[in-house]
Length: 114
Length: 353
Image (tube, rainbow over all chains, first blue to last red; front, side):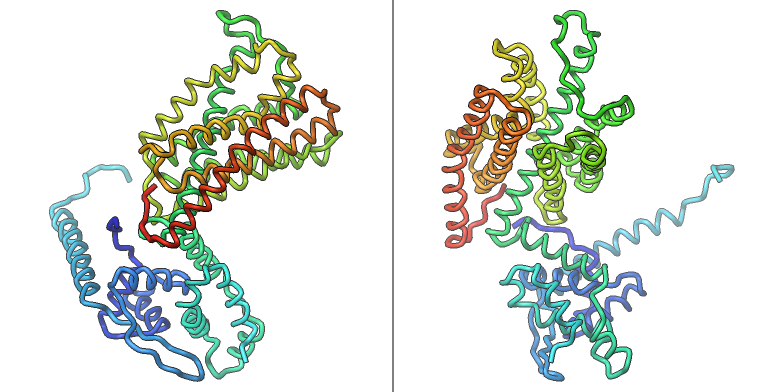
């Protein structure tokens, strides 16, 4: 199977689950908070990402509870999911470092276009 | 008791495949109701439960998920991948066909205008079906959009390809609606069917989602070049075959060209299917989709020729022969497509496109 690049939504879902097992609604709220309100996961998007992550073995079912007569599922990160998240975080951190280093020595051209 | 909002959301979820719904539906419903605040014990929540609907963003997210699941890409279930590959190939072949015919139309313009002296004077130019210079002026450059849409798709830029392909389609809808409303005789059923088939083609571009496998750029650009190089055969056939003009134009009109192209492709596949070139599992389904569309076009156009134009027996016979050849080619393709689908449900091996 070809390796796909990790999407921003998948990155935030894994990050949310790195904090501990969580249900769907909890993941939506966590992602909103982690992204400082920038990423608002729709339910269709969230379950598309969760389905893919479960299929790829990065996330698994933690437990099921019945609350107010409805089933609630909690999901957790697997060890592969933890590794994948760590690799992606390293990659993004390296990108950010490279940009920060360049910006440290960059000076806007004097008399450049306004 | 389930609320109206929940019922509406569950109705929306029926867009998703049944196997997916068995795994995720109840969890999705609960998360959705919590996200919109319908699970709270307040008057607003009660009102929402009775009168609320999933908003546009939610509907779009489910639509996008349904598209990805039903027209699968890399890593999808084999059946969904087969369907996705077939629809993507239909879209590519359809845009290729439009791009080649657009290139031909642009290429023959100087000849039809009498500006290309090395060639003999062209015969009577076919009548443009919409009157007036503004329509002609507006329609002449549309072929460039068809070529640009195909090239964009071939170089893996599906988003611009969708917009570029939509431009001639919208123009076609406007022109045909004008024709139907204001011109004597209205729009012939064949023309409407062509517009509908083209609409289906543009809609098929949604199959090029994020998980779709990349298009093999070199292969498809070569196919375009080959199509353009072979196009003089069509132009020569259209204008110089030693049969009556009425017969030539009917046999090689748009539905005729579609029928002959798909028949030729189908026969080539049936001959070459054991070879490496045709090993991808989606080809019978792809060619079957195209064959059925071409068959419908040819069938309706024959009826149009007979009922609207009082066509001669020879015209009817030639068009019927094209339809019959197509039908003969489609029959084994249907069997092979069914077999490929059945084999995938037994053997989950994923065959790349």
